Image 1 (cartoon, rainbow, N blue to C red):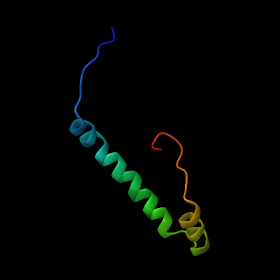
Image 2: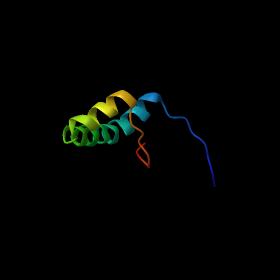
Image 3: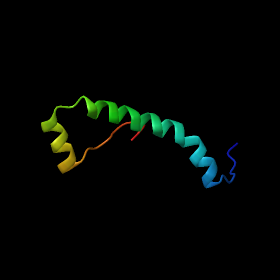
Image 4: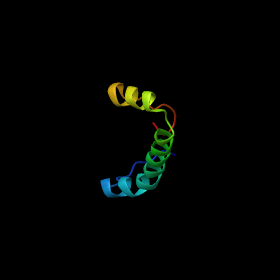
Length: 54
């Protein structure tokens, strides 16, 4: 049976902090291994994340 409840922004922050930090770390690691030309393109044009963590 569906039910509703209220959660605070602090509870959401607590739940998402670790997963988002993991995503940021993975992106940083990937960018550190990226050739400079591609890094410049990303800096100029940005990047799009897809999938469940986007």
